[in-house]
Amino acid sequence: MCECSPSLYLVHPHSQSHELITASHTPTRTRSAYLCYSTMLTGFVYPVVVHMVWSGKGYLSAFSSDPYLGVGMIDFAGSGVVHMTGGLSALIAAIVLGPRLDRFYDRQGVALDKPKEMGNHNVSLQVLGTFILWVGWYGFNPGSTLLMQNGDNAAVAALCTATTTISAASGCISALFFNYYFTKRAEGIGVFDLSCAMNGCLR
Image 1 (cartoon, helix red, strand yellow):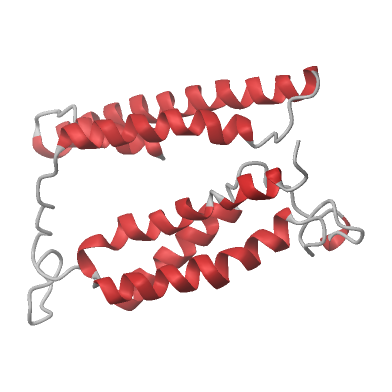
Image 2: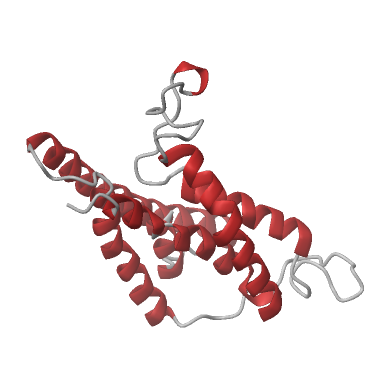
């Protein structure tokens, strides 16, 4: 195995932290703003966070010679490095941009009595995107073992695969039935919402 291949493999997740912000603010920003935050996040913010946790010399790494608080931090597949970076960046962007116009407030800034529903999306493409992400997790999560030299590595990869399947399926079913329960309680008619189920799967 090439000595640099694990490092090259771990470069890929930066796109996920970037996509978290892209998905949350697509209708509310311009292309120039998109280019600016993409450059800042992927060129300056994300590499610093990755080095702190995943590098053997990072001060948060559990594998450094002097780990933080004596224990350091182990982030197996990027739950903290990727999603914390992307989620915090999306939160900052939401604070800067403010609420969507004409959904919670009118153009004069007066709060609406009831938030307007989001526009319809192409559900077929949503399903396709959900399955593409789900299948991609089978490469990313088990692949984070980085090695497959012995039975222990294989057992960890197998556990990651099983956990990925069970957690996504559980989230899908839970979101589907919770949405049914709450819509029935609020409106008298329960709704099995496919979009809600896919969101549950991806969370």
